Length: 452
Image (cartoon, rainbow, N blue to C red; front, side, top):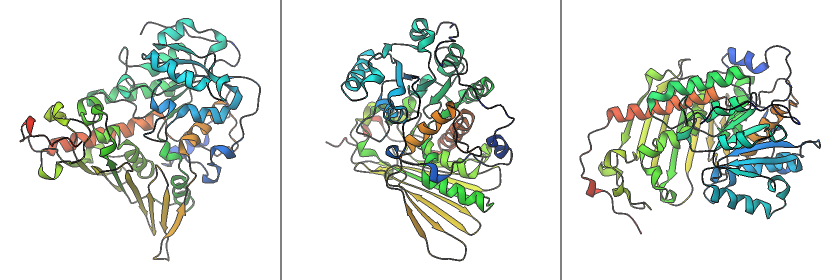
């Protein structure tokens, strides 16, 4: 990327004014070892939240025209949809940045054919951030930049893979919303991710990373009970079993391109584990994997031709890891590539003195089971209408506009630095599992037969 000139001025350009009355409550709680949290009663579905008042426009830039930004049949992600519902007619998407300009124009045409046309009818398409910066005027300066581009192009200090730094350089103080994981480069680059985190923190910019499961009402209910009872987590147990039959993207099956299922997919549950257990003693991480060439690792319902992938780059079928938290608590995580069909099977258990919390099916129909002191039975809490994608966007915008209703609230639940720690954990799991694996013993042409 070429050097950029900071853009300032214009209507509501740059960061809005923030309260400056000392340290925020989140700083205080972080120093006490507590994770940021939100009262679960404040996490409500989109149709229960009124549009933000005001007649001024709210400029947004989207980086990436893919599924995470505009939705697909594969899952509930669709950031544009949530911004539309939160901001209403105030939303103005001033730029859509994606090298695939044909796709960008297509998604904009689809938006302009709907009732949200006013948000997109003036949107300009650019191949790169540089192009936008050269063309932008103060009136079009963004309030927030939403980055949903592939993680291999983010999270480093390197030219062309440092979009966070380039955004802050061009628009000092602008708010950032970044998809997870923060990067998918080699493990040697993890230190660079933390340098990016330091730069973002020093800038004073609002920054949220899209670990949306932290915004589940069930997750925040667990957090509230732990905090109210001054409980210290003893153990976390996480399991993520994907429906591999529905994964038809060849790159996902190639660890050289996707970084592997724990880093690319299991990151959400490693993050939730850290959210409750705290920072991990990385040196304590141990892991084992079931590899594709071992007898139990043969799959019968793959929709891709795995023989086209180098044997050493094929994804493990099972990865099982354990570790110690710095508090002394114990954590474990298992990622499984085994299920057919479409629906995944995911669970997280959290244990504290007298308590067991079990969160089931968090992506679709979250259910929380709680066993409390003095009882052998479990109480059940269902959250059929929960939308953590909207909650993370809603809270981000409230922070940008400085309208948090509760001064004790910590709406940004995942900072870039915190997300770097999750990324570090997932890499530690992958490296530990690879260290313990057997040599590839099967020939390349001995790959499982592709199902029809």
